[in-house]
Length: 329
Ligand code: HEC
Image 1 (cartoon, helix red, strand yellow):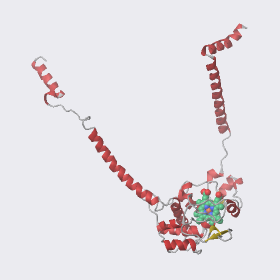
Image 2 (spheres, rainbow, N blue to C red; image 1 turned 45 degrees about the horizontal axis):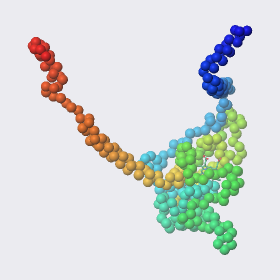
Image 3 (cartoon, rainbow, N blue to C red; image 1 turned 135 degrees about the horizontal axis):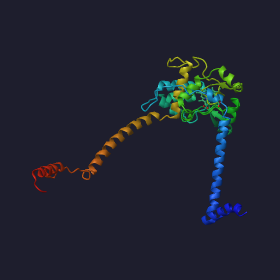
Image 4 (spheres, rainbow, N blue to C red; image 1 turned 120 degrees about the vertical axis):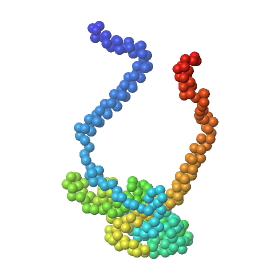
């Protein structure tokens, strides 16, 4: 009997020596550590025992294509002719579903339009057909009026519900910042616009349940492969460019992507220019700082060079010669 109780008694004695509060803390901490360890080992076991099933969206999703634009790189500048063509594609195609609510008509002067052209563009109804929500000054009823250069681009739908109702319950996102909000930016938009294709037979063979639903469209550049947007650019010559550029699907996709880089960052050229001068300034300031450092530390870091009789090598020579000649000291 005594031997059975010996071990618990020893443990209790140990705890009593350590102090009860510390013992309880040790228990609680140990309990936490045990639970964490248990769940970690359990999860690792499940992962290796039944690995996650492969997903069609993981295996068939493609990285965006390469797109070279004049605005790329630290010295990039916008190609205004291309931005104008992109605006035309947006106006004639994308604006039917997508808003551009952070851009105002007068910003279009950056694209090389003058005031009269912008006024005509916003309010003529020929190019820009969507009107701005307004109020009838006599009756107070909701109505619309022609856009002014000071207005932002009005969207095609009065609200989200209407936008969803017109698009099979999918919401066409505002495009003002889309090239900033998607990985790959303009290259992603370009890939998406030119990436529609039939669902590969291989995919259906491997994932028979992953068939593209009826109102969606297969596009390997979209994260989940099936997109609610019908291919907006489908035929060459869908728009007629004023500058005579051939409007192939590829060209239109490039132009509108370049335009959406501008809408997301109209200050890009100014930023690039400022960055260049800031770099020059910092280089210059670094040289100045280095020279100032040399100046400040000049005395402290001065190396004393001893010559003549005090030079250690000369002293050694002297000692050696004296020893040889038998002269002391
Ligand atoms: C018929 C209406 C319609 C037109 C026209 C249209 N889109 Fe869309 N777009 C949509 C809808 C709906 C979605 C949302 C798709 C989804 O979430 O599945 C969408 C989504 C997008 C997206 C976002 C994809 C993402 O990663 O979430 C981009 C970019 C886009 N459209 C660009 C364009 C461009 C550029 C044009 C003009 C060339 C255009 N769209 C024309 C309806 C349209």
